[in-house]
Image (cartoon, rainbow, N blue to C red; front, side):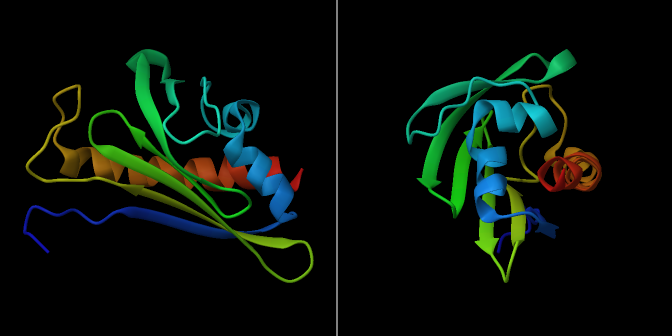
Amino acid sequence: MHTQDIPEIRKTVVVQAPAQKVWSAVSTSEGIADWWMANTFEPMVGYEFLLHAGQFGDSPCTVTEVSPLKRVSFNWGKDWNLTFEIKQLEGEQTEFTLIHSGWDAAKVTEFGQPHAAIREVMNDGWENIINKKFVPYVEG
């Protein structure tokens, strides 16, 4: 591990929802928009899409993995990768993990902000999004 490395953001929650419902929330444009951000996502490896990030404009993304009912990953902007992992547990419980990687202390974002500073902001942001938006959305 280089001194430049900044740890990935990893958020794991167990939701009271079947894996199929969680999968729809992370593998469809409508699902992603309902709990996170408007987008032009399609679940196809190599598909290029946009995240409509409000005041930050549109972020270009490319789908890198689609494993039905297990995981979906995409490159986000110039440096990041976002992965949504799903694991069916007992009954109607599903474990959901969000992994936001690609952090590098030597790099800055498209807006010139150092990764180290933005990671902390994003870490808090993901905590809020997962607990206040994602969980109620899939359990609703």
